[in-house]
Image 1 (cartoon, rainbow, N blue to C red):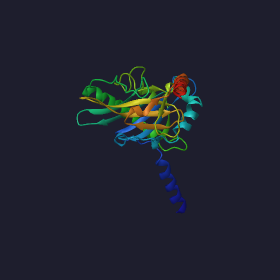
Image 2: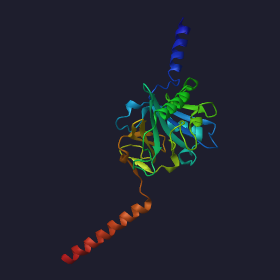
Image 3: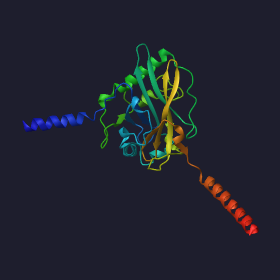
Image 4: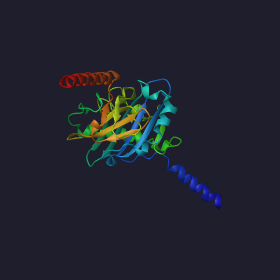
Length: 265
């Protein structure tokens, strides 16, 4: 009897870590073009999109992501030019659907504006179906060691993250694709303690009447995921030459002020 109880508890504990994407959950996915890790996608269930209404310095569901990215794509994952990541979700409505899709920022802290116009109802339904095909494989995933919502997926299986990410279209309808490149990380996130460089994706809600900005996801070189409703909270890191120019200007100003003060005396 005791063994049966223990076995039941262990079964419940392990099932709690099985992937179970609910409608409206945001999914963060990673892929590489070749080399180390090309046979795998890393997928994170970020949680319900309704939970992303304010600033989150750390997205809890992404805990442990950095170590999984390292073990899957190598210790240089944050500087690999072929590592791409994006965020997507879909929710069914009575007659069509709403989609959520990311777009990479062309300049850190500057809202990406190439998501314009409205998607047709049929296109939204197509995107929803593609997302549902992806999540249908969720029962085959188990969380990576030390995590509860981070998964490693065989990129060759049908409807994998890789298969839903084309070279120009994501989830059958979103163009340009939802992907950003981690190697382009040039931003700092205000108030976040890790002081790492971030690559930023803007998240949009796509509807049949138009598209609206939701917020920005930042992925740091340490594997931390942050969310801000104000993308200016992700600011570009000045080049060393910029700091040198500022210091030089301050020095010249100080010398000029000192000379003026000396003449006055």
